[in-house]
Image (tube, rainbow, N blue to C red; front, side, top):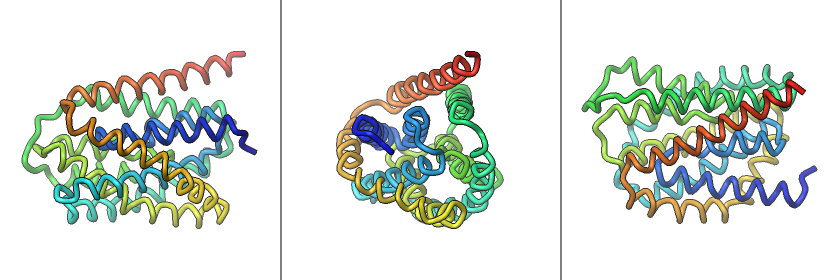
Length: 254
């Protein structure tokens, strides 16, 4: 049973995550998932809750920059991701045998690895890439999305390897998140039962805070330089990941 403090912390987390994703185009689950694990929510419920809020935030973002959305490419990415999502949900079900501290260690470790890859890998933007890279990026994104809801990084790395504008990059990411997540939630209901819908309802209940975060984040993303925004986002995410890993290790050593 959640207390008032837990609800406040969840609301603040979802608001800040919405601000981050609307500013840089990704980061909702990367920010929110480790924090919600720390608060103590079950991982499947976190994936459903964060997915719902990310979908809402993405729809709001699409309305603001709809002219820049590459819809055909986004729908292809969504279809390819579905196989990865199914496999990821199978892995998530296996993770539930772990205690909360171990889950926090796993999620923190995944976050640190994802952020490190994005910091290290600096591809030279090109007009087009081989289709195999798209298949790898989209399926890996689906896999990570199913396991812990953090499926953004492979899409970010792939989109940043193209010579796209910031608007088109954000439009692509928003469109994939908005179209893929309803299907993922449907798969989650089939895998974990109708109780998952309570987290979906909670996500919609937090709509005002998600909208508030998006409203603040979009102008920031439009005004600040792309590299500056990403450095700030990576620094924050890396801090959260390291804190989760170190905290979990210290608890296990006691």
